[in-house]
Length: 347
Image (tube, rainbow, N blue to C red; front, side, top):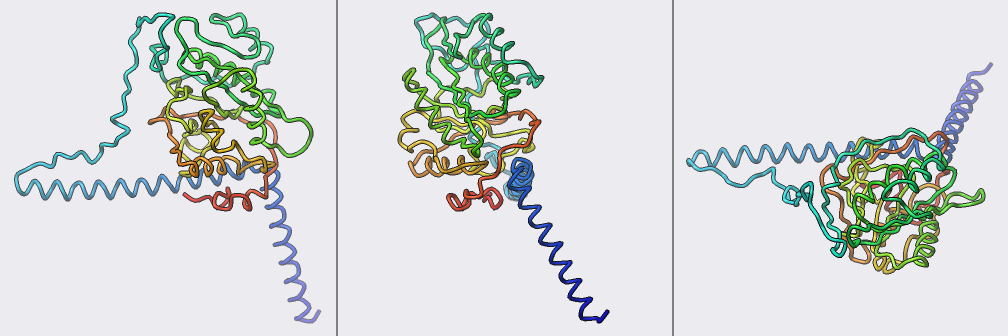
């Protein structure tokens, strides 16, 4: 066989291999975005952590230089380089045995809020959870509605959960979250918004629908946008309307308990109803996985709101493992929100 024909054949086979590899990778990204983005977000979070560590090392070196200069003069530098404003946040909770009257507004820092929670991910049927909640004391009203009777609820909170094909996750979430909200003495109700059909999942549109339906029931103070597979690890992560807009799920186990990027607003977030109205809700254009939370972040910033986050480890969450492939990737999100495209997300 002539030499030039061998080269052409090798080039053709090489190009065919590269084409097959690239199309396979693109299909995997499209059909299983959760796995891909979990890895990408974890790498980004590691990058942020490395940069923060470098900053801390620089601050420590600066501190040693400054303190050394002061010690030469026989004086001491009083500024604490390790102090941050978050260290000054109040952490006092009411003592055991604290009493209040039914006519008084419920406190935000109750003694029943102990902190770290045991997270039970064992599967349970929805019927078992419903029976347990309806028979328990204080019992929850059918439909997922509850309010305290020993004090006046400080906040009325609607929990909106977008849903499709997660039948094993929903009862786990309800079993875990309902007792926490009762301990926080919030008036609350759950709205499970299920998407029918086979079209790509539109999480944002479901939240908008949930908001419309929830406001028909009650004049809620604020809305919690809650993924069905996110379980909080600390009951002091208060779901009341204080400090909203608020991003609750700051540290997720599958991202090594690090924030994937500074503008990350996914998992569990909350807004006052008046804030949600001002930003015109979620976008409806995001079909499939990804992008709607970043667009919501942009809307919040455009309205001149500042997003708050829980202090320290209060914002830790565990993610229930998926036993099936997630929703397909929304390929148009890079056109609608290019600055927050998942695979080139700024950090």
